[in-house]
Image 1 (cartoon, rainbow, N blue to C red):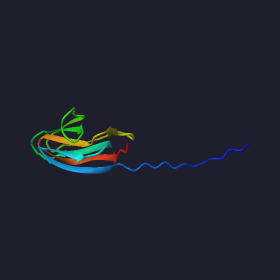
Image 2: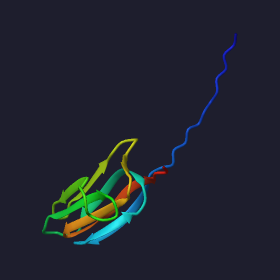
Image 3: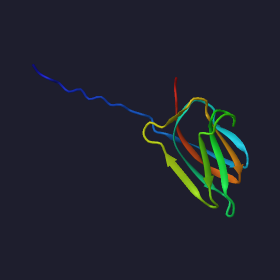
Image 4: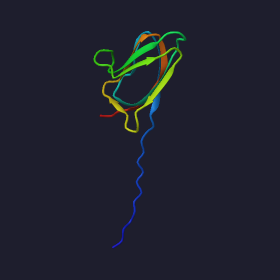
Length: 111
């Protein structure tokens, strides 16, 4: 009996950034199902706290999945590992105070 080895290459597409810049407003930054691998954001204000919420959807109804506070001039980032987090309906960001710019890092999710 002999054994043979078979090489299999499994290729995953990399996550890619979707940028945004929201000044005390809301916006849908991804309008389709995706896996969110992380985010990076900055508060443009030099004096005031920025607050925002990230939703699975195309509006800010429902439950905020990521409530985020950024101090004046603060930047923040988070990474959710190799599997990410499934957002079934898109990514909607509601900035309730100040101006926040940044990116969410996603991969399109195909059902």
